[in-house]
Length: 258
Length: 272
Ligand SMILES: Nc1ncnc2c1ncn2[C@@H]1O[C@H](COP(=O)(O)OP(=O)(O)O)[C@@H](O)[C@H]1O
Ligand SMILES: [Mg+2]
Image 1: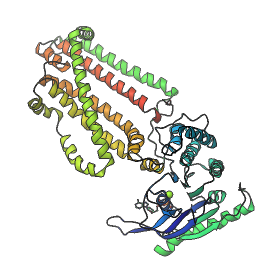
Image 2: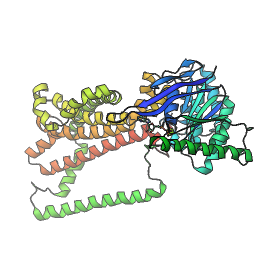
Image 3: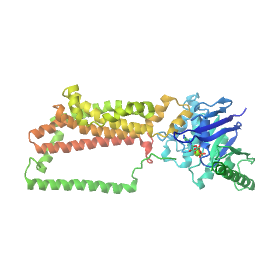
Image 4: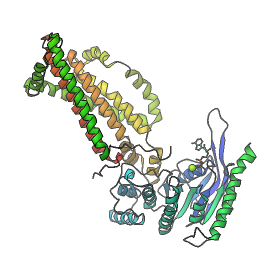
């Protein structure tokens, strides 16, 4: 059985005085345990909408999202979520933020303490435990947010453009760190991105969504050994192929709705 | 709306000199006004309208050691504290509920918005009818002037919280109580403290007025008394004192603000 299933999901936004906006229509795919999946697609194609439904923050208009066969109904600690702007609690120190991820878990206090120490290490945040988010660099905030989402031992980790706000030079560095963190945690990951090279670097599989009702344009497994070499010819081939697919995904809107 | 920061930056060391200079300028202007007053009082020579500067200063310094003045100031401050405490209690609860629940907002905001249009002094006659003379009406008036800034700022604090903070907490297993305790309340605190400053400030202003009419004790009463006895220099001295007390109260709340919300400042130290 798939770890996470998107089972005929449709999402329609209705606003008064406007045509109903069909963002996603009858979307269907499965994600196997331990896979790193990227959802790639043009801006506005419904990636965040899909991810928030996986997170349980909003419900599909029809269809279901299943985690180990059980329909998702509302947020839960089974699904860790890293928001586009991280949403670290600004009034909590790094340590307290990360610890919050396991605050409601059944671990003993001692276990939590050990786990916290471990997570701080994995996220390279030693020495910054007592700082507040505002005092951290973007990279540290991102790592803290991932550590917090991993703390509760979720079955899947959902990442919404986790590197979206990071500048180009930092990006590759942070991609390496992100890979390192999720590999250690051996966890199923769904990441939303619009950065093709990022998706190739991190994913086992890239799903390209179209601007036209989020149709799955392509489902591309990335068969490259890890850690991946961004300068290899193979890598470039994937980037080239996916770039074309994204272009097509974007044009679908122009073809069908105008 | 990505990454919108709700942070405030304190002036760093380089700006400290500048801030110092600005403060000095402020002090200089006050000094100039005092000198002008000193000269004008001699020229006009109508102490009932503009009292002698030196005499006023004598009254002013005497005021701080005069037991009657101080005990009346104490009475007034106690009223402000009591009235503000009630306002905090009521304002926070109403504000949190209004901010978090659209239903409560819809139900309560018309009444809140109409009551707060009533000028605070318009409550004086009614408050005397309700509470008689003395503590009752003054505390009530402080409450009425303090509660609305608290409600409004608490509401805007709650509604200004990034919904993703709440989503994040829920995805980590937090229930409603935990969300209030760990997200809504700390997230609202900065705005609440701004409200508190406004509330205590307007409480301090309205208590003096209330004491003109509704009581025979307190700082405002001393002012009316000085006016009736034609002790203008004392009246001036009391007014300067009331400005200073108001300023000190405001600074104290600012200090509290910085301590409680140090997480908003880049150079803030983690506490606890
Ligand atoms: N709450 C909402 N109400 C109405 N429309 C929405 C809402 N959320 C998203 N949308 C619309 O759905 C579309 C997809 O948005 P989103 O999922 O954020 O795209 P992406 O993350 O792929 O850039 C956009 O056209 C957006 O305007
Ligand atoms: Mg998005």
